[in-house]
Amino acid sequence: MSSSPLIEIRDSCIGCNKCVDVCPRYLFSIENKKAVITDFDPCHDCGHCIAVCPVDAIIHQRLNVSTIDEDFPLIGKQVSYDEILESIRQRRSIRLFSTRKITKEEINQLIQLGRYAPTGHNSRKVCYTIIDGREQIEYLLDNVIELFRKMKSRLSSPFWMILITLLGKRESYMRAKENLYRLNSHIYHWEKGIDKVFHNSSTLILLHAAKDVPSPIEDCNIAAQNIALGTQTLGLGSTFIGYLHKSWYYSKKIRNIVDLPDDHLLHACLAVGKPKNKFRRLVSRPEPSVVFKNIN
Image 1 (cartoon, rainbow, N blue to C red):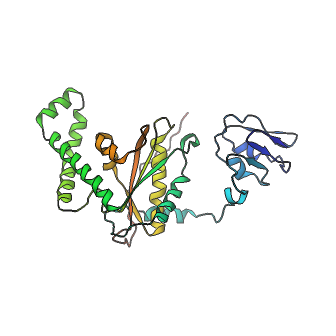
Image 2: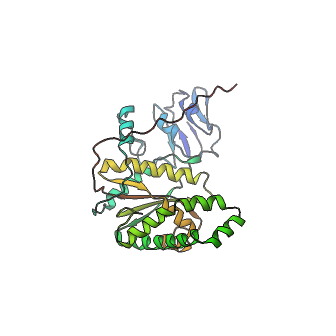
Image 3: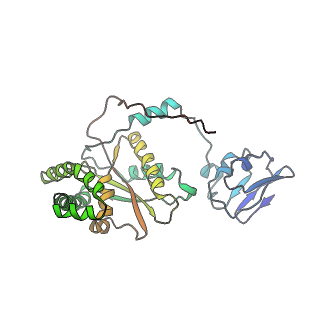
């Protein structure tokens, strides 16, 4: 039997070399037809060695919490390509939710979908903040709309155009001004009690991570996409809310309302709820640009 402070290789090991093949940190080698641990220090807890072992010979103290079958259940039916494609194509960005509030159980189920998303360096540092209930969301929306009014005023001001030009930000200013009609629309509709920012959602899921995480933007958005794809399996729907993401960066007041940890940055926001309307058909998309490179 080979062991380290956290990994144990039982005598049942058959020396098949699979753990050596799959370990991204090169921790294993084969000696005398048995796996041995060469170096434990860089282990990043991916669990691949346990998942691939045909005889369940590897025990990892940080990963084996209960039984092998509870922590590492056997893989079930393989999902087909057609099933995956169908599920992806069924996802719609929902822009009108019903008044039905989603349950905490449903929220927890959605978080489980994000839990199993890949992360850079297997850091597993994506965090979730839930804003639940229309009263809280509408308070947040009031402040987002107030920010929109301030932005509208600045974008309409010749003084701000001169200042932004002097700061070398004219291109960003002009791009923002081209989208001024969107801000006007959101302000107009909310003044009439129509929520075109969060789309009448009952729940917001905010995904954030500490600044020192290796790839926080990618980690949070991949987890968010996992959740977005899974909402329809619960009879729910979702849409990404870029306006809150941008508002969080531009407004200290909104940062205070959302109240993330001081060292965290917000990277994704999903509005989640029960869609008011049911879609009957899939939607076509244009063919992507694909180039096969021959690199010599």
